Image (cartoon, rainbow over the protein chains, first blue to last red):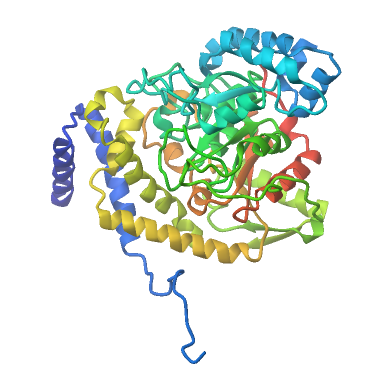
Length: 63
Length: 461
């Protein structure tokens, strides 16, 4: 509950920083979208790239 | 005769003109009359080019002969993200309601050069940011198969205009499925070309990494005819790719040499049963026609939607940065979805972008073994308009689950009709090919439509 409140306050601050004013109803809907997207980004940040480097080229120095 | 022209194909319309069975002016008058009669019900068009289309007709009538473009005298609807000189490009928004275009877009020029008749600007989701086709800023766009149902978005008006016989071809844009989703919901054919094959100059951006422009029509054959004139390198569009002169020319293929993969994970999980059964029936049809059809698993594809949204949101917010303080001018649905992307850090955007590269790399490996992926276009039944105002409904969040995968990879992807469900609403199937293999995707869709009747089904207007 405490974590939820903190996230909500942070979202409110983001809106204030951009000078965006919302009705209570719009705020709740936007916040719901925000929470969903936060979860997606946290998954994206945890992605493992250790076996992925498509631009890597392997040169054989003996050639 | 006049009552039949609304659903004529490009080739059929062309033949009527050449045989002098109808003049372009007579055809135009019929279309305009129909639009004036039914647009207040379906709201497919935001602006109708009544006078301007008369000038287009005069130009077309002077040149139509056996050597003229097949697109001459063909009736076009343009999504209102596409610039037409001296006309408003509103993007379905209040913010751009007075945004008059100084120049034609590249594709507008292509249509004019080929003497097509542009009938007007079509309705859309505000700033093309939404999947259901709902826009509280514009008159409510309605699905011709059931006017209480959403048409799908964001190219809602383009799909409805084609489905209701208010133009022969329409142009849509597709960042997460905005051509293919409404095509599926409205029972028409919608083609998203490979990334960069059609210039986006003069078309408003939503997400520069994933925006595509493409045709929506009654058949894949008509989509092909349109692609022949709107595709090609544009030096003024930095995202445009060079393609060969014969990119869309005749290529023979043997069905038995085409490998179609049906990915059974993700694309068949949590989907409507009638949609699932229609796609399985389509796979059987391809198999019976002689194509090689295999079931496969693509585990990584489950991350596709998440990455699509992860890249799209910060890019869309960046484009809208200058407008966001006027939040009261945005529709609730778009505002409340877009603002959810606030606070994305550069680290997060780069993570999404890098995931996109990894996703492409993995998909390329899959496509080394297959020519086509056969999937449903959307996972859910067409929702009712009255249940679709929130940006966070199950349908709004899941509608683009399958289509968005191919915006990430830039692969060519087409939605074609695959039947009707028990509620008499259209079901779409999606065929997605290798990058830059657009012609093969269209050819296979044409072959499917030559052997089925689903694309000929019409709504009761």
